[in-house]
Image (cartoon, rainbow, N blue to C red; front, top):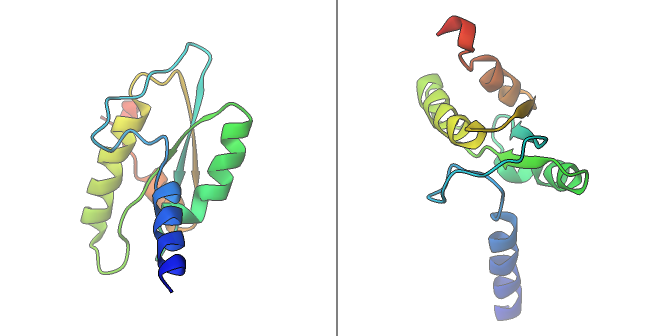
Length: 118
């Protein structure tokens, strides 16, 4: 039983390691030709739902930011506040950004204010 628990803890630590800039880490640095993929999961999910896709993007030399936000029992305003902060920290200085969202993640992305609307 202890072995199973330790395996789960190790897996949680590995899955939680992403290239996101929304942690306490300094903003990511990008080269002039780098492309960033920002991945937003759907309702009732976490960043784990997009983890495999993120790994595939990384293998093709994309920088990746996995958004992680609570969805169940959260207000729309709360979700948007969480994601807006994460997105702003991820995309700072990124020369080219691609957004990919599943279900609710697509709505989160669609709600991002554009430069023309600010």
